[in-house]
Image 1: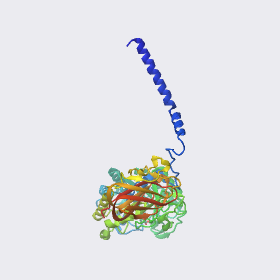
Image 2 (image 1 turned 90 degrees about the horizontal axis):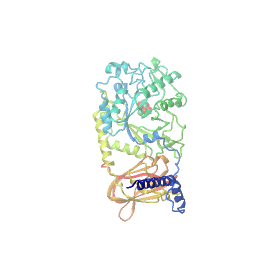
Image 3 (image 1 turned 135 degrees about the vertical axis):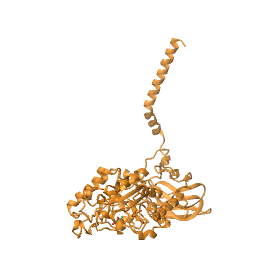
Image 4 (image 1 turned 135 degrees about the horizontal axis):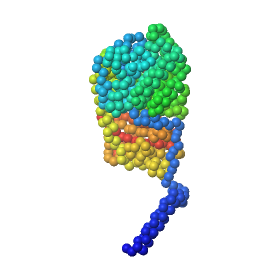
Length: 507
Ligand code: FUL
């Protein structure tokens, strides 16, 4: 190649680069012109639906994904055989003989619990950590010569085993001399600060609603009533949690992030909305019926958490070793809690050794095995799905309900508040559990729906239900088919469904 031809080639290459750069810079304008030229009616892009009503915050969305976690009721009551301690027992009463935080957390993990919440202080006021603000704690116990810290032991074991950790700090304190006066509030908040500062990330803070009554109160042995609407000045207490653990959800009868479900029997309402009217309830003063069902068109997203014990009591009592819930009872609870869009907080109380009793561990493990087997195979995955698509835009196409991705969803046009999807399964399947999920960032939209199966000649209804939210599980007798139909029969806004799953429970 001569010097001339080399120069010419270089300059031609440079000028082609130059053209490419110009074209690249103009690309957005060219594309916009092309889109504008597409005739009306042939549009390929539709806007996502507007959210309907309140939607979850990012911290609530993370909380919804946990679904099942455990409660540890542990403290003086474990050793006195009581449920509510009076607050007058000597600190030495707490003496687990062989506390093993790894055993507790391993049992929880084998049961599929994704977090544990520990009663750092129950109503008796006894602290399972060496609080700087009271002498009524394990620092005067015989356990580890008063040098131990149960909160730290459990928090660290949770981290080692890869599950989350949360704390319960009873507002009612039957030991503290100041309970009922403003000074107690300072004490309570100091303790909250200790727990939220010294033990790593906290996923949930549990504010119990049981409040005021008789107690030891520093020797006064009296009855103290408080006005639960004003005494705790909750807004300012909650600010401490937001300041120190902004990722943590707060539970109480009234939220602000998660509400009580209104009973301790493991039963969410058959209809259960994630929304309620903010400010209507306060911790310790709420209508259990409203908490159980929620409020359709409420102004706040405060979903329900279902707390229930694996035994009759919250604390361990040897007399209840034969009364541990059976696998079938635990399954019923799962379908009446998680299956109705709530999270399940299952209490597994450590015994006097400081470990989970074998009866509880075994029930929990067997329950998890059934659940794992149930949800191992989704017969709807990969089905061909037919139904209306919002604006003809593939981002909202029906097949998103079977793609195994909660971030994608099927939606219809805004006027489509009733709609149907037909799923042709990859192969004939026998199922007895159906899971339907709404796409939560767009709120709770569906009021009623049904799932049908094709019996070879006609549609038969498998089951129908009302609220969906994070998930709705329908469980009934097994059917065998290769075709199912989802019918949204009533919705407040066009449906946005992220999953339809079909499963087979072995029992
Ligand atoms: C209730 C308490 O009074 C019980 O002792 C238990 O802690 C339960 C989870 O909450 O309000």
